[in-house]
Each structure stands twice: as structure tokens, then as C-alpha cells.
Length: 171
Image 1 (cartoon, rainbow, N blue to C red):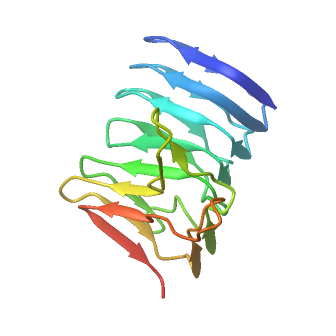
Image 2 (cartoon, rainbow, N blue to C red):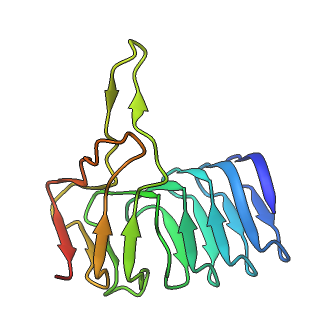
Image 3 (cartoon, rainbow, N blue to C red):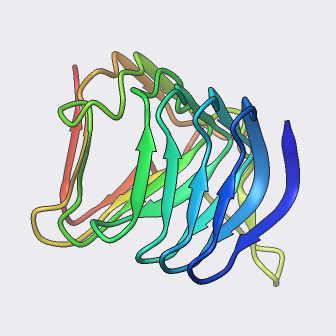
């Protein structure tokens, strides 16, 4: 498992052909490529994928305790994700991502492993789990049969989505 901090600068490439699990803070700049052909799981990763950057992990089927912001100028190639629990997804600028584009096949989602966010002044708020903004942007979660969006704050509430695009869920 790779852990720690990885920063791929402008026009750089990292090939990690045998890496199976990624758990790190990752920053990928413009025209940089993180090639992970054997990766099966992304766990506990905060990924900053800048416009023009790419992650190639076609066998990855788990994205847990992780976050990423995507738009059409950021390439995030993964297998059909069967587990996305305790993760946050941010989509913008007309990106269409999820079940119909074969990016997600998860049957359930839970955020029960996440804590509330604490501000500098000590106040707390529930984190956004899925943020979809921009015209023609959508996150298709129609494979989900259940969503549990409680946090470890013992009050059982959360904000599940901030939606100005299209948010789909199977009922």
C-alpha cells in the first residue's frame, strides 16, 4: 500500500505497475499521469486532480474514505466502483459520471465512518457527500439501493447533497 504524500508536477508520469492499494494525499498537476494498472482499491485518499491531469486505474473497484473533484478536463479512469462508502465526490462543468457511464455499481452507501467537520471557531457542520454543479452535470447513483448518511456525531443527521445539477438514486 502506498501512503503519505504524492505530488506529480507538470508533465510528469508515475508508473506504479504493481501497486494494489492507494491510501495517500495525491496532487496531480496539468498533463501529469498517475498510472496504476494493478490498483484495486483507493482508500483514505485525498486526491487533487487538476485540469489536464490523469489517473489510470482500470481495475480499481473500491473508493472508500476518499475524495476527488472531477470535471471533463480531469481523467479518472477506474473500474466500476462497487464500494464508495465514506467518500465524497464533486462533479462540475457538464461531467456525466456514475452508473450509466460504468463508473459506479455500488449497491449501498454509508457515511457513518465520517466525522463532522470542525471549523476554526469550534462550530461543527455536516460535510457534503456529493456535490454536483453546472449545466448538464450529473452523478448517476441509480445502482444504490440504500443510502445511510449519518455521521459519528450521535445525532443522525447530515446533508447528503448540494444539488444544482442532477442527482439520481434508485428507490
